[in-house]
Length: 485
Ligand SMILES: Cc1cc2nc3c(=O)[nH]c(=O)nc-3n(C[C@H](O)[C@H](O)[C@H](O)COP(=O)(O)OP(=O)(O)OC[C@H]3O[C@@H](n4cnc5c(N)ncnc54)[C@H](O)[C@@H]3O)c2cc1C
Image (tube, rainbow, N blue to C red; front, side, top):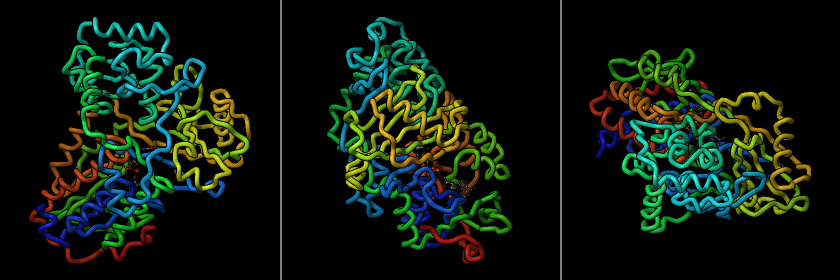
């Protein structure tokens, strides 16, 4: 039993940030018997999970899919009453718009790295395929403490596989640059394999064999009827139903250590806490920690972010005929503007059922370092999306409604050295009892990884809360801000 459980109801923990990480932390803290207050700067919970409506159809305007091969997101959805609304994608096929055509997304690779060249036939040129085969003859490529995914894979298998497959796949997750992204942080299983094996294709075959031997774990991805944006709403509801407080429009401005615990500065108010979970993006976390932990603040300030925009387009079903599958990725090497398109109504059965006469598509633009495209007007982003969709799929019809959702600094970048940076941040944070950090900036940007980081933060506090003085007053009452949704 953790220290928080032992002191049921006694420890007051303030969670700063009402995104999925902060909410998951609050949920888990309540399980452990803590008294919880979540501070959320904006007027809604959820952060990058954002449910919306367009042309009368419910859609996700942010994240739209949860990896189900790791348990945290699906398990949390079940815990907060969404079990009946979990839905796998309606199609397992996708495409890649490469070398002038939409081609089936190859199967049999680990983040674009194949176990054999033949797995990528069609996607790569013959020369690109032949280059992959040289992997078996090449001397070992040392990876040291970390290496960029693109650099290592290009050294083993050639640039084409990076530019045409690894890059768009990694870009889909990080909006990043494969030649900068850390293999250790972004694809740890490949990093481990690369440390142990000389041949990368052989290492991938081994990963695949292990996966094939494991008991079938169900769908790789999962959605939620109404959108994954429903998850934070349900978690927030559960948090409040169990006595947790969620204060919207309540920005934490700073954190000070006291002999008894922590003071959270909110405008002119002070909120006292036995412990604090900082669940905000790195730049905000850096500002919050500047007084209490200048070392952590410096490291957090160095974490870079990529901005992107999602363009949602709704068409009349009668007007369009899309290729089958859930959509397509776009390698940047071909010079197109969009980086991916999701055929949302084909991907999610619940969305197709929302209005059978309408079809929802979305495109994304913006990668790390690409700022020009995001300075364009919404109408321009719709126009470039329509242009690229026409080229890729022949779709010429006019949408009945469009929506541009901008995610400025939406995705943290994990460049080479990120793993070591995060270790240093955690070391600084661990030096301060009653402080933990979690969220997308640390050990993974996906929803399950953010939830896992929240649970790890709570476990860390479980130790720290031992022996902390009980707080009897409830200073929350004096604060402005409404209750959560
Ligand atoms: C466009 C887009 C699409 C994505 N698609 C997917 C997907 O399909 N699947 C997937 O798994 N992942 C996806 N991701 C990644 C994933 O959604 C995010 O990494 C994750 O939701 C981040 O959660 P978080 O709680 O760490 O941070 P956030 O969602 O950023 O939440 C942080 C919260 O803290 C609040 N805050 C900030 N500063 C303060 C302060 N000082 N005081 C109080 N509150 C503060 C913010 O308002 C925000 O609500 C996507 C990301 C983006 C941007």
